[in-house]
Length: 407
Ligand code: SF4
Image (cartoon, rainbow, N blue to C red; front, top):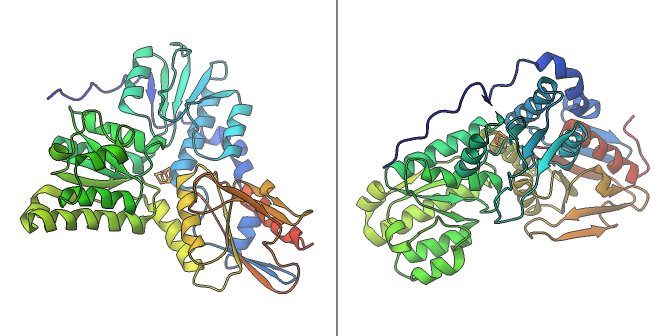
């Protein structure tokens, strides 16, 4: 088994910022929101006329996103004359990414299932790795180019990597609850190769986990696994009969916590049913790797949903996994509108443009979302990559739809 690669060169690799926090405070203040602060001080409530808006008690920017954005700003300060390139979006928020572009930071794009093209990167460039992290292969390719690397990978993502790495080291296949195309899951899955030839399989949800359970219990053959997961969601050389015996479960940090837990239990139960309790003890591991910020936001929205609400607004990028999880939770209980930004709410036309929860890539528009008269209670939350100023703008537009303002 090959040994771990040598640690990165400390003169070209930075993951603790540049000590410029004070210098960029003023720029970062643009992400704060006075209206949100006011709501927090009023029991997370704002009332105007017949409209009451209730904000979840945990929402918006998480510690990992705050840190990543701060490091990007510090990087610009530290290297004012250098070309700075971000490997994909730093976080999934269109507004934040647009601001970084305005600062002259280039964002490398990548189509689904295609590797990043690093051919334009020169040794004198500065490259920022996003909060989701990058794959081992991309990290090594960048390191080989000799450029300066500023690594903003979130500590909670690093914890998942350690878990997956340990599964692979001990001969367990990592079964990852996540989205195979998501940057974080791609990076996490790649960790199985840190010490050699480990394997992974990525399941999107419980229905995909059940396909794996059926194979474990002999109710489906290897072709059912291949047709559902290969090649996009399994490691190269994946052989179901060899690689679905010893299984360790982990998850993308931003999935629905409840579903991740259930998937782990189902896989363990399938092993026990097919090979006995001894096999479940010896050949199955599971560990909840949902990050605490995701968990807190999901718990807070569940608490908010226990109140009577007429509608829920969930703000965040359409490609933001944690926002999608929040919208899915809300849609179980109340009409839910996942919007990318305040601009989706049009007070003039009284309409809202939104993504339907639970249906990939389906957007819709309606002018029938907020009753034109009478009392109404609107719940509000935002994904971990949505800054408070953007939440405040949405609040203003919700009220304006009823001809009201917050003051
Ligand atoms: S959502 Fe969780 S894992 Fe992702 S950046 Fe935020 S704290 Fe880190």
